[in-house]
Image (cartoon, rainbow, N blue to C red):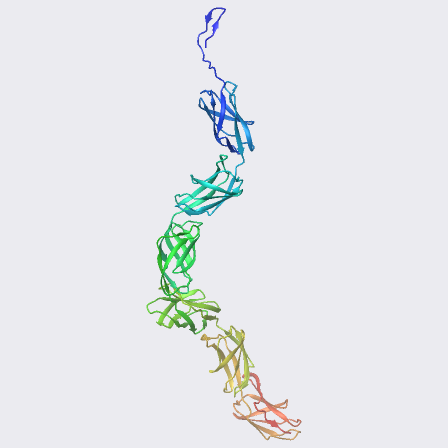
Length: 544
């Protein structure tokens, strides 16, 4: 294009180019439908499109840029729109030319995908999948894409499609659905995990009790988080738990003695692992009793564990309430151990064959006993002939334990009454004070502390045996263990008079006035001893 000054007859220097544009036409659009969310890539077909021109495509009332592709095609991405058909027009915005003709694009509300089941399957494909969501429409065609590999999906209901997984590589794959009729991809997706066939290589420990209960780790490859596994020991199946891509854990079921083949199955996708391993069931030893059944809280008590099935050359531990010590093999029926320290009270005793990692059956009880104490005895005195019922007071006495009480070296059984009292019957003893100590013979523990018990002399006869009620009769009392220098009183039916020491077996006293039928009771006091008294075992009557 040039410019001429017609008045001066002069042509302007320079020139420009002007392009005549034919009015374009619109004939069709492909695909002709898409999601109300927009985003569908479409090709608009027509004529007269010119490179270098700018175009817009209007979908109903929403315009977007359309890009020149060729003289007969433009491309565009649909804007969001309401469900239903809209008219599509094109404008050459550079030349301000509206194309003639139009096309129709139909907006469809997309379906949604919320989940799939099962969520995993074999890499070889063929797993029947149920796809759950909403907005599926009867009569339309659907495809399901598993990580880019598409298969036909079958309409079941407005919320359900079914499909069969294609083959794929091991790992997680995104599943999407497309409405092929509407050309609309469903919103949402799900994850499907392709699972390769796992392998089993080994198990640890490789042996355990026929009673079951052994915690084992199965090593292999190809284990997948989220999958469910089972482990079969011979013919018994238990759950196996995912630990890592190379390990599962399980607890052995009960089994018969001997070797058992162990296999693994991914129960989620019904895949049996290749390979297997061997677990050997061993008959556990049994514990029937221990002796002694109690000991000090400080430990150090030698115990004998009796049972069966102990094996020479195997190593054993004995656990006392969770504290383990070495147990020594003696015979097929006997182990020995030394107790560790423990808190007062009963604990379970268990034995483990550490050579094969199997706990023995049976759990006897061992009682840790704190050292008891003795603080007092009541009554604190009694006859030299023994037979006095006494209560020994202290602390730390334990029900079920056996006790002895020593009276100056003469021991008798003491009976548990409570945590603070024992009862006993005194043995015979010589006149005077003796130290009383207590021993827990079950646990071989000597109580700390002691008490004092006094043996009293007893009268054996009185002469004369009668006298006037006015008193004044000199009476000779015969017995034993009277002590020179001690002061004595003699009670005639409650009335006391002075008793005079004659010799170790004789006292004399003058009877007071009294009614007939007095019972004589002797009482001794001494400057060297505290007062004490004793009633005759067989009271001697002094008739008045």
